[in-house]
Length: 190
Image 1 (cartoon, helix red, strand yellow):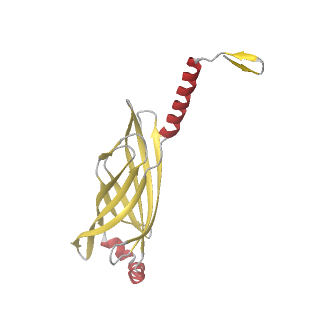
Image 2 (cartoon, helix red, strand yellow):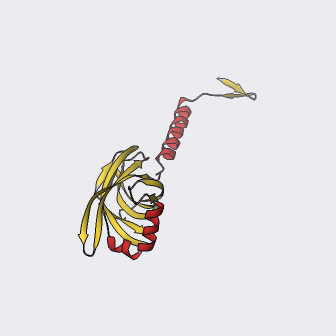
Image 3 (cartoon, helix red, strand yellow):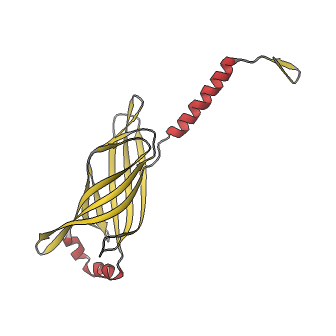
């Protein structure tokens, strides 16, 4: 028994357990708040050139580092990433369906095809970029899937926008900025 301000206070184990459980639950809710995944382009490798008279199309392999910072594993469906040059659709990369464990990093290898016709439409700008050895590409993708938290499945969608500066001669990644926006649906519709 303790005395506080002249009053007797009775210690209660049940109150202490309820208080500790409340603190643990609050901490779990704060750490369970969904966080946006991160995407980082590691490399671009030319795999082949395809003659598409009168131009050439390039097939490349994009290596992307993806981080899932959340406490839930995810399964995602296949989709296509659009790649833009000077505001025009230059090509696309295929994202295969897959999964990623919680709080993990993973490398994705995305085959992409870049259309020579679009570069031809911007020939003057492209030649300037080759001379400067800096070319700016933009990419956009929506990835949908399911995150499993305990026994509940939550549908989600991630929208990713990337702004990448590459060396058009050696295909080195010079600089990049990616933003992602995660939306979690509490109902079955996604």
